[in-house]
Length: 153
Image (cartoon, rainbow, N blue to C red; front, side, top):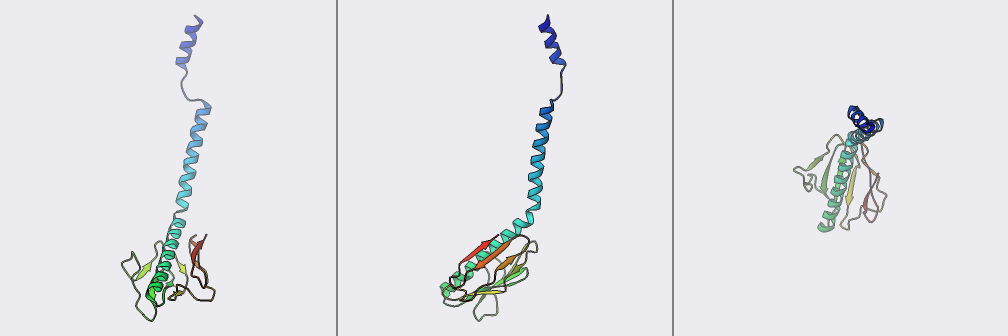
């Protein structure tokens, strides 16, 4: 008789335990935190992408100088930059671009002036100022003499 009473009692119990409710709330909090962090880092990701594109274009200018026995370089002007050959006033198209002037996305700015590589791929014997990329893009450095191009966050 006692056993039948317990079976009926279990059928009447409905709902969630406190542990189940807390577990669901913790899962929701973790998902919300991930979503918020991804939204906040969108501009930083764009800036890092722009930095990597500029770095590859600098390497392209360096390779053109090595293969052409003349100097090639990149000239930055705020949100744009262009590829220039020694003595030419008109810019050349960069790889993967439809125009001679590269325009950054999301108003990312570049602070680099003009960096020129000679026929040996060297930017010269003087220190090259750091290239800064806005909105968390970090900096690009070009090593004097060797022309080694790398970035720092």
